[in-house]
Image 1: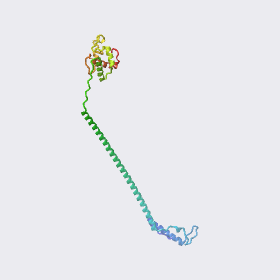
Image 2: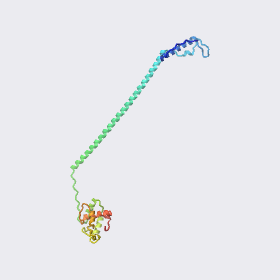
Image 3: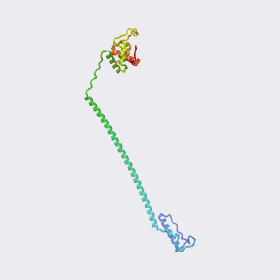
Image 4: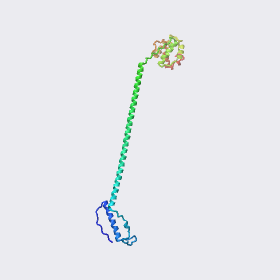
Length: 257
């Protein structure tokens, strides 16, 4: 049996394609029922016998088009919902970043204010302390001058006064060391002079409590004492200065030096 030849059609839209497919399916179904077709074993089927072609969908083209449109609208709605959710997430992220920046700025400003307040407090404390000290200085009575130390005019007083001068000039020596050498050299006579030793023969006799020659006295004289070689304090102090330079201390001298 020959089927009528269908005319060629141009390019169809999606909806038209569904319509053509539906029409062709319906035509095939009618032809199969009225004219009969062969079964699976090759025998012809009666016109009223069911065929596998009868199960082909005969949906209305308009229904197919409506379903396609609904699917398209559903996809568009899904895309719009996804975009809306993405936009909301981006906005939330942006807001969170802005909130974090605002909190950091507020914290930085608070820390700066605190530092400024602390610096101001320290400055005020220093000013208050300086003012208190100044007030105390103006209100407090002036300290009484230290009482002048007096020394007896004897060997004990001369040694003690010499030790005071030596301490002011960092010259080492002890009371016992000085006393021991004075007794050996002059027996405690500040006017003693040796006219028989080698120094005397050279024209520079040893003089005073510790028997110092004039050149030694002049070189090792200590400022603040008399320039008189026979002055007890000046003689002791110059001799101890010489002994410190040559022996480490008058305490280390046990014989003529």
